[in-house]
Image (cartoon, rainbow, N blue to C red):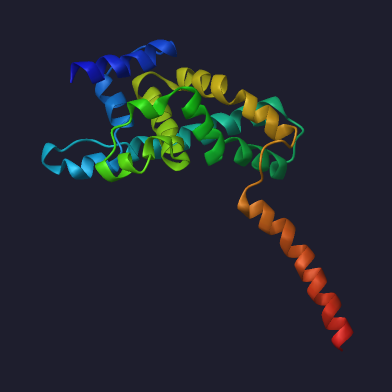
Length: 188
């Protein structure tokens, strides 16, 4: 569809990303629900690009933190990375880039507001990173990611970005265990 191709091309133009294959970008903005509703057309959806984009995103943020903060301990690097690449951050970037308007969704997802759902928007951002990486190169993908996530990295470093569930659980468990041990002592 020519109108869709132009709209997707606008995404690349706004971000100064050279277009080599618009079909990859089309896949990045095609949700599985849409592809499932149009199985006879054999439409490519964004799950594979999301998988790749997730890996590229982790590498970019990990490399940036590793090189920028050479004295930071591994545990802190992990916490900052997790806070930066969390669903809320990625969905927020997607909203600022208005990526939801380019999504092809199935009827149910569309009717339930899927183009504004955090999980779908975060996945779309990862898919876009995968598409950029495949269409261009690592450096271009890195520039794109850091341009849009540097604020979130800074917020995470300042402790203003949320903690992941694993960290919250790890912080809670020692307190609960100590509390439990105190009660056992009283009962003995």
